Figure (cartoon, one colour):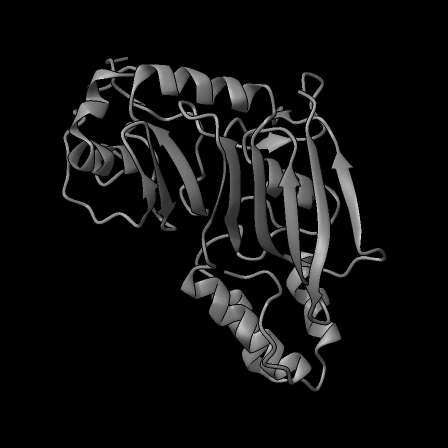
Length: 270
């Protein structure tokens, strides 16, 4: 079997939504659809390609594939990410993530309603025993994973959750929500065949455009909303937030208007 072709990590002039930067870190609001780092099949157009253009010195730290990267978001998950701009900052940020000192809060639209306003999902996550591209909570070699959630709003069959990641497992929110029967809307991997049918039953007599809007979601409705960390050089605790992207704002607006007849703004949205 031939060896995979090497990936060429070239700087690319790709627009970035930069929320903050100094000589040690850069914080960006990643758009949905952007892969974080180059890999076979995604050798260009990635966040790393963009960062190498905006911050040329990044190429000298952290190895070739993930310069300055200390955490990642899935391709179709939007929101806040921090990247180190020097080796010492990278080591310190990596330590904070490993020690669970970083606050990581997300917003997600999920199927179903909840009996309580808040709770937690404490289920181990590991590689799926059959489908190696997926993660699962039923594997024998799972690692501890904890997600704390609370309901922001309910829409008669759809819920808007605020989720606080206490660990950082691959696909953690998507896997955990799926495991408890509340898959993330628009998720192409972790989804339930019965979700849409159940929703249709609850929406009898309601506008069919709601079902159409939910079915047309082009990616998982999951957003990294808030990131809190200690600056690796100054020691100052800093919190960064990213407003909901347009697709999630539009879907929430439709749910509010057509299901509840409300136009109230999301609490805490910035």
